[in-house]
Every structure is written in C-alpha cells, then in structure tokens.
Image (cartoon, rainbow over all chains, first blue to last red; front, side, top):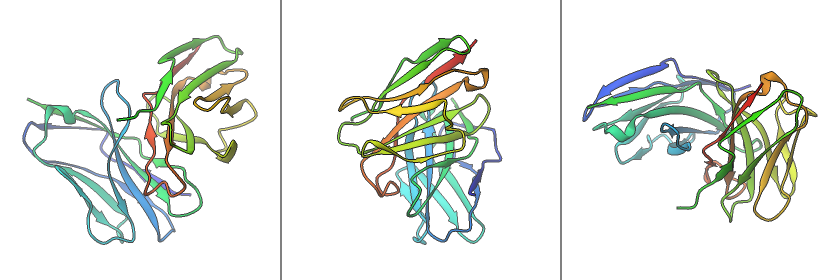
Length: 115
Length: 116
C-alpha cells in the first residue's frame, strides 16, 4: 500500500520569502502521479500543482514549483515570493497510474505567511 | 469557475441516527468520490463512483455506508447508524474522466459531521 508522509506539521514564512514544504512517499509502482493541494481556512481544497512520475522535468506553476526526486521518493513544494493568501493547509497526495483513482494523502502542513 | 458544493457545512447528529451528506459535483464530471478526515488525521479515501455504481471502496466503507446519485446533479453519502467514530470532515470530489491524474479531482468545502 502506498503511504505519504509530510514531516512538517506547521511552518511559517515571512511575506515575499521562499519556503519549501517536504513530502516523501512509499510505493512499489513505477508510474504514478503526485499532487499538492492547498486548503485555505474555511475554504475548499484546490489543486496547486501535479507531477507525472515518468516526467523528469519538475513541474512549475507560477510561484509554485516542485523538486521531484524519484529515486529518493521525495516530492517537495517550493513557494517563491510568499503572499498572505498562501496561508493554508498544504496536502501532498499520491495516485497510481492506471487502476485505482483514489488519492492517498499526507497529514498536511499548516503554512502561515506573516506580514 | 465551476465548483463542487456540499451541504450542510456542519451536521450534528445523535449516535445511532441516519445521516445523509449531500454533494453537487461539477456538471460535466463523470467520476465522484467521498473522502473523510478525522480531526488531526489524514484525509482518507472512502469510495469512488462511476456510471451509477461504486468503482472502488476502502475498508472504511462498510455496510453502514452507501452512496447514491438520485438525480442528474446530486451525489449523496448515507451513514445508516452513526457511531461516535464517524465524527469527521467529509469531502466530496469529482473529476472529469477516467484518467484522473490528467483530469484532477476537484473538492468541495466539506461537511463537518459531529456525532453526539
């Protein structure tokens, strides 16, 4: 069974600075997807960024980028130029390629951006 | 942008009572999901639903749980006889098609279920 681990329950960063959230996972599969979801306070979970395991190039979405290390089974999220609106819970998630459509989540990291 | 909507936002129910959580997925989506998050724990998959039947369920989704798409827009989760340990945030999600890695799951705001 796949597992996802987020070792940082809480983090904080100053506005305009850069922060990196860690995620590791365990799987015996070779092809899969990885996701970062953001859940602002009292708001719905929204997809931030996704990575296909067969792609070597790290995914980037504006200020958000990932460092995908397949051999190390690591998938960290870097937020550049942090904004107050980035304050949220961040969940790392895994999905198999083919077959099961379920997401396997980590416990989440609560990120606070301070002014 | 279209959203997944869930009602109610908070449900308080006596233990042993039945509860129905409601979701309206995004209109052109074909796959539907329920997840739950017990306070302080991970978001856990419960069930996926496609073409009017369950496509996958977890070991959590026992006989006390059922899902239904009663009409063209709603997707419901029913818990027949609630237990204290059913207290959690329940999230509904939907995705456009089969390859959900390329067509990601969109989540609702969640329903907080409190069992007394």
